[in-house]
Length: 267
Image 1 (tube, rainbow, N blue to C red):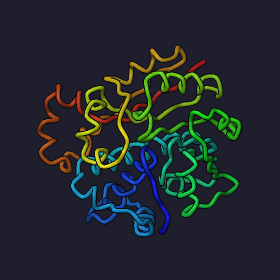
Image 2 (image 1 turned 60 degrees about the vertical axis):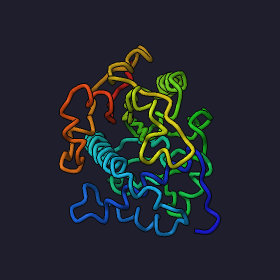
Image 3 (image 1 turned 90 degrees about the horizontal axis):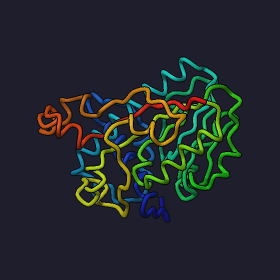
């Protein structure tokens, strides 16, 4: 696709796209996302730079599966739910989980949404918002009247500072009625290893924020209630190679993991 040029954090949206497309070509894929193959084939970019990033690849598909399962559980419980997907990139979750009733908003930076519009079209229930999450005017474009609200933040908050994350938590509390949040987090140890990361080191971006436990988020706002978390190392151990043995050591597992955390905001 001629003229496509993504740099910095926006370029990172190509990493999960690549990871999902690679997975779709596996004999027994953890997730099946043929749309990702179509998008990757149409984007003019040197994806070969990620060929050796197998740990990122398996991490992305596991987090995708975990988020799919948790989001589907929310939708099954609340069929008329509203979903906000922060830092959506080229995610395909709406098309894979749509029940014909939910209202879904994909939010990302203008350059990311520009690329996204080449592959997806808006409908009366699916909207794209081309704004930074820190441009709080995006809140005005959300209609929360459709039912309970779920916010998804996949592969995004680790690029923010701790104060920026706190500010967003406050925003969610002030703007919505008791929403729930599914958020991907990494550990403080991993935030220091951006330059050694197998895929992130190939683009111009770095990690800034990490926490040791999802319970820490309860200290960010008094309305936050920790529900649970899922550690990537606990899933598809056969795909983790030599890392699966190190993950049996609690000190390693707790310092080098990625997790999906589920929290609720209670008034």
